[in-house]
Length: 216
Image (tube, rainbow, N blue to C red; front, side, top):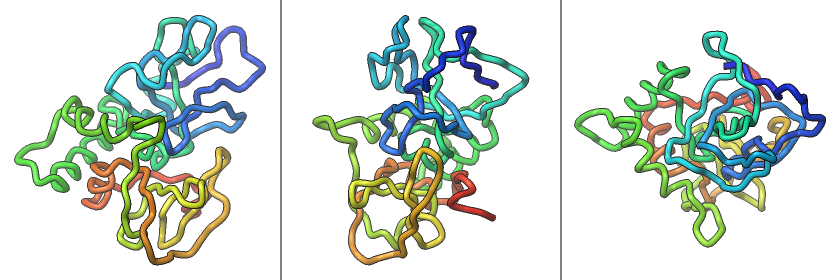
C-alpha cells in the first residue's frame, strides 16, 4: 500500500501520526508503518473521534502496488507509526492481509501466552485488546511492572515521556526516532503496551523497531 497526500498536496503536516499512547498528532517526520482504526476525520479533514471500529491494525506502506490518497472524505483515516513497537503500544495489531505472516506469528505467540486451546480469530484478538487500549477518565490505561522483567519491544511511561525497553536500556521516543538512552533501574514503571500484547511479546513475538533503537 502506497499512501499519497492527495491531489491538493496539502502544504501542512496532517494530524495522522500516532504516538505510543495511541494519540494522534501532526509532524513532518514520516513513519515506517501505517494502519487504521476506522474513519476518524470529517470532510474538512478535522479529527472528530479517536477511533470508530474495534479493529485497530498496523500495515506495511506498500502492498501489491496499491495506491491510496490520504484522508479522503468518508474513507478510513490513514495513520502512521514510527515502528511496530509504537503501533503495538498504541493498541494496534498486525494486519491479517498485508502482514499475514506477522499476523500468524502474533496469533501463535498470543495462543501460547494465554494458554488457549486454539488460535483466536482477528475479532477475538480485538475484543481482548480493545478495553486495554482505551482511555479511562481521559487517561490512557497502563499497568505497573518491574522494568527488568519486561520483554524487549515494550513501551513504558517514565518521567512524563514514552520510552522503549530494548536490549536492557530505555530509549526515549520522539517523532523522528529514539534519542536519549537510560540504563535499567529497579522499581516499577507504568507499562503502555497492552498487557495481552506484552505477554504475546514475552511468548516469542518480536516487534520491529526503528533503527535508531536497534542499529544492527
